[in-house]
Image (tube, rainbow, N blue to C red; front, top):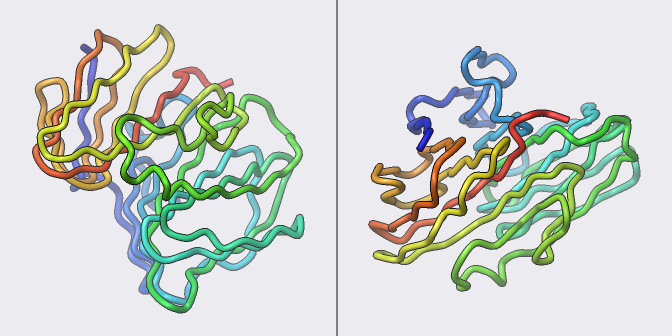
Length: 237
């Protein structure tokens, strides 16, 4: 099985007083030529935004932007007139398409923790779009649950790419299969919380495994754990 491990301490770091970020891939001032993305996946940012702070209006284009909120809430406004507050357990999706400006601020009540993910779309200059969805109801359900996908499977948010992001929560000792990796695709497993054995390797909180070929294997949780699974085409459209 072809796999690459990136440990939590190997991620990029940015500290801006009110913003505390860890980068899986090159972003802003952090540049690592060996970490420029994973196929169609360009960004996994692990952010803590202090209460009431955030990003003023700024532009994006030709990118699928997914925000998974794990604590607190983030308030979104954009140049298309959309406004929404995404809370812990919810996922926000923005198609930047032909161009959009947006702002995002942590609500004043508490610090906000989130993952912001950027995926290259399968075509350029799409109409900008904003959507959010509550996935808190899957917290106690077993197995993989898609949050976003190219076909809207399992009531996931539909994005403009043949890609999917799924989440799973495992109890101590629980075993969960990883799907096989078709030719031309790759799986990236990111440990949000907990400790796991994956394909004979131990992964801990915020560790990452990239798998680009091989037979099916399984996760075994050494403690209660939460994981994200990115299923990506390895060629950008």
